[in-house]
Image (cartoon, rainbow, N blue to C red; front, side, top):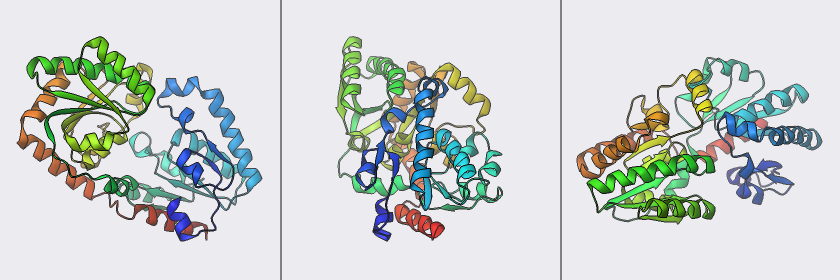
Length: 351
């Protein structure tokens, strides 16, 4: 949005998103991101009536505003349905999608269907453009915006060889399921290396209070801070990271880590049935091989995770090999100028 305004200051935004998007909008904007931030089938079902209401409100908003273009950002479960319905109701509307839906991971045949209701997809991973080409859907690789953002967060600090970063995710359900596993892992680690230090980057104060109480009950010494994830990724020697954006951020900041994830069993079961990629972590997907060890669902066992953490903490050579792989992977994302390239592609599509 900032890059679009730099290119054309007369652009007006109206829609739904988060507080930073709301600040850039001069029209009514629905700050819905907190409640809309759900993942997995079970969590979606619990808020389905609310999501359905939002769906029809947004269609009505499009009908009333008659915008030059509808720009959908990520959130494929909701946005792809919105795009399909918007196409049927407003056939002349330009419909653009930024942050390509990861249909390549679970249903590549859907790309051909998407071509019927999308005019352009902006891809953030280099391999996506080639996949869309065969479907007839216009696509452009614009680079990963996260890399551009992270360049501004660099610190000149020395890593603490005894510090293990704990990054349990930003969603409540993730924290609730994953942080207790991290505490059990810490217990195993302290038995084998008593001088290890643990630090958690909490997404907000509510998460921090809950984690502080759990750590106190478990009698595990953990420092818990809020809003310090990037700082921690650059100070720690190694880490345990919840699957998601933080895994790519950790790779960018060259933090050696292992990946952990656990979700509701019904969500996991359905996911295993429909997923076509062999890995969960984006670093492994981009590399096409196992670079970062993954401890997912029933494999998220504290003793096994502790063994991997000890390997990373003890071996400088293993850490350096992992860092070199991270550098190669991050270089493929072409992050510098990603926002500007995306803005130019959007303006070209609607001109």
